Image (cartoon, rainbow, N blue to C red; front, side, top):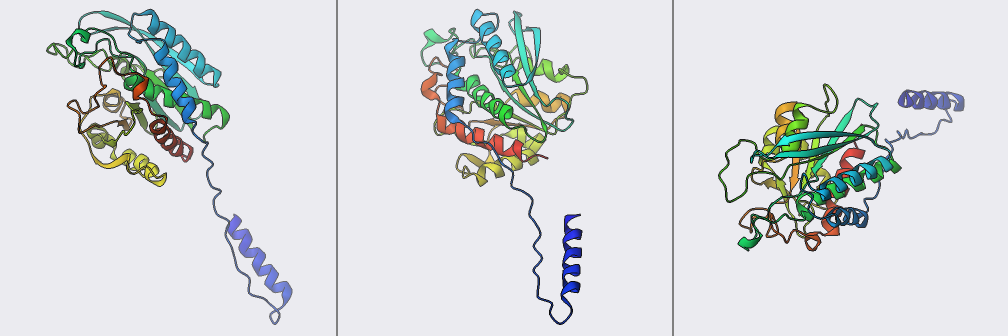
Length: 328
């Protein structure tokens, strides 16, 4: 309508001036207003990581685990989200029954167009990759492996409370992701990892739940992190990788979001893709120089706040915000 009205206005203007006195008039079409993306507060995200770590290891069936879950729910509700908790009993590969909790925060739940953001909030029960064998049965703090992704998403939630997106956003914090087979044992149960997301992907918080796509954040806090195009993400959702990596490049983060293939990682996104057919990618650090591919702190007692960088959290958080605020 604006284009048509502008054209008619020019015709009427020329007619009123007369053929002999008409002046050249330049038609300027108004551009779409630029999308205002809120500023990601890296210090806030860092503090959210620290608050989780302060509870201690968040291992299912522990008091620290329950206390952190309650805090996460309260924090998300304080940002205006409608929070649904899946309080579930899961079976670990050991046969142990785990009291777990998936936490789902819904922003603008009335909107049909939705994007899913997720991370796992539990921490590994055993430091089975620690160079000291005496630590192999000790739980880890999981500052980077778990808390970093949650810290970014809590800051995203805070921004959503201040400036809504045009679409609905669901933030899901999965439990029992890191209760997979101990490194010293042979896997006797298939799919022993990512138990919380396996449950949610089969039994979502809403019947027939669907989102346009999902973004999983895992191990996203270490200084010097590099995020490659993870293999499962590439297989199921290469177009979403294109979307996210191009946004990161436009922000100047092409040296961190590397536009080449990394390895395959069994993570929460696998089950979202497999069971719900929601194209979901994994933003996860790939450290080619480390023996395990994730970094020297991974699954060790050293996974603490010394391995958290505000700058890395900022790059990831700014990228996520730029993606979701540009959705229509």
